[in-house]
Amino acid sequence: MESILPSREIVNSVPRRITKTQSGTHQALKNTSYESLIASWLMQDGWQVFLPVLDHGHKTDLLISDGPQFFRIQVKSFLNRGKSQQIQNSWAPNKIDYVVFFARNGGWGVIVPAFEERQRKLKHEEHRRFQPSRRDFLKQFHLI
Image (cartoon, rainbow, N blue to C red):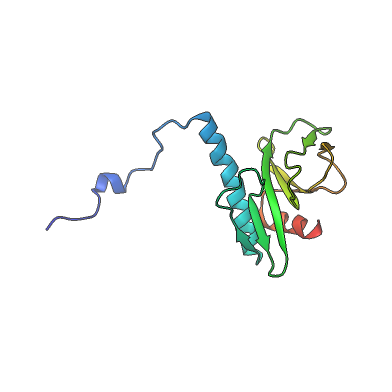
């Protein structure tokens, strides 16, 4: 009888990705990973998390609910360029409740109540900076 288990060579090998990922695909994978991370943290906090099948044109990456209330969240990443950096309102005219920004080169993020201005300083008083951990994200999310 033939074994259905892989040979010993394959079992003991270290998995390695051997194909090259195109830059656009790589960026989409990173963006989706940030959305999945936020969804996981919110589910661990007891929120119902809904992922739109298609958010084309609506700018909603996550829809969360505590039962009676629903909130729309957009997740973005950016390159940190210093203390006076501006963030662009790329969700208008769609109704978004919160935007979560991840600094791709900084190891931190910011939770922002959606604003109507064309742009706003990243260090605005309404914004809540967090370290990329479930505990710190939820602490800042509850304060917003």
